[in-house]
Image 1 (cartoon, helix red, strand yellow):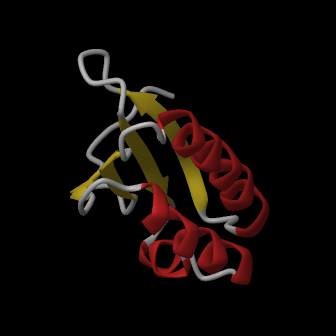
Image 2 (cartoon, helix red, strand yellow):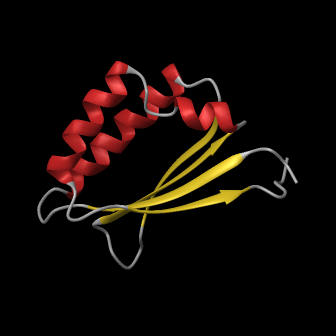
Image 3 (cartoon, helix red, strand yellow):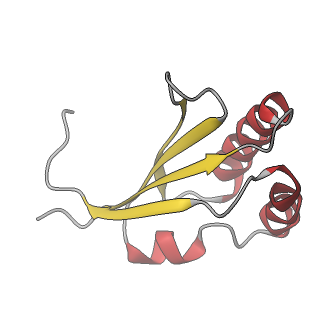
Length: 102
């Protein structure tokens, strides 16, 4: 089994905050690219049937990279802002990559 760790996390935007949440995740994607060299995938999706629900698919090269996720000062500040945009707690699934198309 490969040693890549993967997370799929769903966030529901508060009413009227969907576009602001989308902008937040686009900015977070840039921050992860800048500050987390162990991140190998960071995809932002929106549920087709629920446009206020955003899904983040993240993949990291190893457990150390997962542990480093969100630890930059900029990321911490951004996560504090996220609480203002979320409607309820996020849901997360944690997976181990078995295989990926190269």
